Image (cartoon, rainbow, N blue to C red; front, side, top):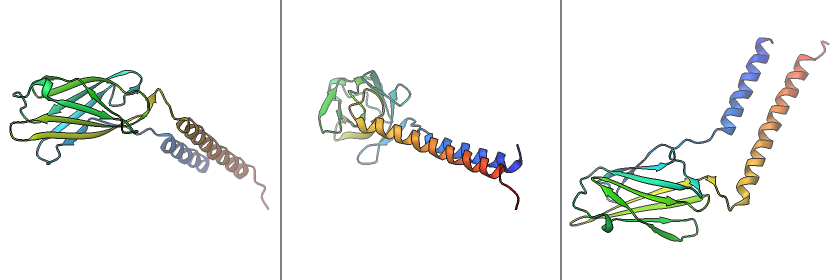
Length: 170
């Protein structure tokens, strides 16, 4: 394999890798609505929940909330249609956790409200659920279109390489 062919193959490999790459999410850093208190949100498994399977939402609040009772804390999850669900929470020190099953693939708004002596801490995050039960046919069609695009680009690249290698000198 000559140097030019190797470069073309490497470039096509990189293009394919970027087209098919899946975005990675890490722990979500949150700030309350006043911008005074921070929190870290972790959603199991691996910050990428699976629709139809139980997930654990875990908040690490960066403020002492030991005086707050668990039953005073409210965790509300709103789906893409606007339907709100209140999830029960447990608190240990400054850690708040809740088990929740996302019903289907969608974007969900997670809202945590912690009443304090003179104010209320409000945290909001958007969680995208892209694995598991799907109620959206468009998602499957988009995957099919993406696969066809990658295969088409690869086919064109192979055809160009073959044409270049088998060209006739004039």
